[in-house]
Structures are given as C-alpha cells and as structure tokens.
Length: 499
Image (cartoon, rainbow, N blue to C red; front, side, top):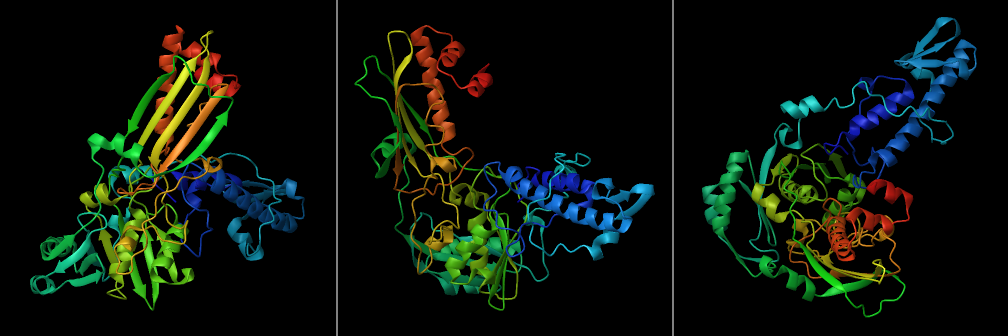
C-alpha cells in the first residue's frame, strides 16, 4: 500500500517498463481484500523486492501473450516484434496496439512464471506523479474523502487503560444532544453525529457525563530503567559462542531508550459502513488482510463478509493507530446500518492511544586482551515486544477490543524471530569478530503501554549501545576508532561500508 514512499509510482514504473508503456498508462487500484493478492503487511522496505518482482513477472507473461498473438497475425516470429508506447510493431511497419489485441488475448489464466522479464528496471518518465498533489494538498487523504449521507463519530476513551465505566448520565447527554446516537459496549463509549462539530461538542458533554474507576498505572519516566529491569520477563539467549570467563578490566555500560510515539502528521482516520450484515472499511492500514482478520474475530463474521480497502494518509514508520481507529469506526457504524461513519482521532488520541515504540534497557560489557583486541562481549536487553500487529493471532489486538463488555485479552507484544528480522534483539549481535560472545533478551511481559513496530524496532537501541562501547574500547586500546573496528572485521562488505 502507498504510505507516501512512492511505492505505487515505483510499481507502475516496473509494469510500464515490462509492457512497453508510459507510466501514465498504468492505473493502480488500492489494495482491497477479495480483489488484491494477500501480500501481508507493507513494512521493512520489502515492497519493491516482493510485490515488484511479482508484478514484473506477471507483466512479462502478459506481454508474452500479446506478442504471441501479434506474431500470429503478422505471420512472423515473436522475436521480430518490438513494443513502444503500447504499440506492437512487426516487419514491414505492421502495427497493433494492446487494445486492438485485447479481445483475442485472455488473461483469465494462472501465471506459469516461465516468461522471461526484460529486466529494464523501471520507467522514469513520471517517477513520482503523486508529488505535486502532496505538495499542494490536492491528493486526497482519507480525511478528505466524503460519501453521501456520511455521519461522523467520536470515541471517549477511558482515562487509564483498563479502567471500568462505573457511571453514565445518559439522560443528561441525550437531552443536550438529541441529534447524537449514543453507542456503549462495556467501557467502549462513543457517539455518531450529523457533522464533525456536533461530534466534538457531544464528546465534550459525554466526558462530563461519564465516571471511571481503576485502570493501569504507567511507568514513571524517572524510574523507567528500574522498572524495565525488575518487571516480569521472558528470557531468551539470542546468541552464544566461546567461553565467558569472569573478565578482568570489564567495561560495563547501560543505555536507556524511552517509549517513543509515532507522531504522524495526520491523526488516524477510518470510514466504515454496515449494509445487509456485511462490513466495509476504508483504512490507511499497512495490511488490509491482517486488519480484516482481526475485525472478523471481533464481530464473529466470516472474513469474506468484510471488505477492507486501503486509502492514503500521512506516512508512518511502523504500526500506528490506523488499525485501531478502523475498529472504532466499525463499532459506531454498527449502530446506524446503511450509513457510512467516519471517525478521526484527535491529536491527543494519536499521541496517547497509538502503539508506541518499546522502551529498551541495554547493558553491554566487554574486555580487551593483552594485545588490545576484544576478548569477550556481553549484551543484555530488557524490553517489551516490538510487534503487536493485527491478523497474527487468534485474539484480536485492536484497541477497542479490550474495552468491550466481553473484552478480548490484552496480549503482550511479541518479537519476530531473527530469521524474520527480529524485534528487541535486532542488530544485538555485533557484526565484529569477537571470540567469546553472549547476547540475552528479556522480553518484558508487563504491558502498561501498548508497544508495536517503530522504525528499525530494536536496532536503533542496540546499534547505538554497541558503537558507543566500541568507541570506548578503541580509546582504552589506544587505537583510532576506525582502525579498531576494521581490525575486528573480516567481512568484506562490512569493511567496505566503513572504508
């Protein structure tokens, strides 16, 4: 899906290059469940290498089918056909466009993967046609989309995660806002109004009419290090080699990375509609099928009764509130079937309710031998998990699901295995040649703040800690920092980066 990174323009360029078309002739439909292939989540900068390769291969196969038909009509070999601007040309200036051949070529078939791509890269004629619209505000984000008879919703969140709704002056609210449709399901509380200003006024009134009790305490920033170190955790050895003697002259340093908010330029937004028992959602989710899976679990629907279509919004570097606000919109829209409901989070919602990048406590220790080389290295991490995306478990992880009258359990965030990139342990194993090494991860299971993917996951903390200690070790060994690193690097690609 397009997150502002120019992905659709890149994919259009790949298709255009293979088909011999200008990029302007390629139209992309936004990812939509039931129509688009399920390629998981747009993350990790993998879209061109994964989706782009698939599109290149499919385009090559489509081109081959048209070339074969043109060769049949021109009575020549396929090798004699060239394509330029969508026109297939044969000997003697014979010419046919794709459109003229379309009725004779069926694409309703399984791809066999045998066609050989041209490998032209991408067409650069219109590399980023989306940029003018982004610069001048004419390219619509989901916030700009409107439908006939669309209503507007707002949700009143508990002041503390896990708090219970213990009082609600419903009569006073309805007297003040007769135009609003009040929606309550356990501690989930919201309303639907004819316009956004009415929804904002109704939200302020609802906040005064509701009473809450209980909820979870938040970690205190001043004692965050102690909290991470003492919280209940699941311990895993990430890497171990050699022996770890009780090192003399051991240097030990601790590094603390706080919880980090995404702070997207535009707050999360979604539009939902129920019609004939089926749910349609417009969302800037990173994975339409993953979101559909969690929505199906919440509402007890077969996935095919839910359509999730992607719409553009402000970019994100990881998992923000896009999926959560989609459930908010669906819960509110269920109260007014047949009418689309749009809900836009406030800036306060975005900065307090979206998943955060996990805080990390990192302790690194190392010792030098008599020759000034690293003899041993220890690396320990205390951190919540770095992934809580929807569609990956039998329990939905969407925010409102925790507040329903029949709530879904709050699951602790998890870490992908290193084979899939890792989470808190990403880049914790140094790239340097160290004979005796131990890396241990402590996944904190207490989850007062929801955490999920933020750009590079645990790598930002681990690399910072490793390189800081490398500088200290170089100074202690009396070596230039670059020379010290190169002395511990045999890998030619790693050496090339530093050189």
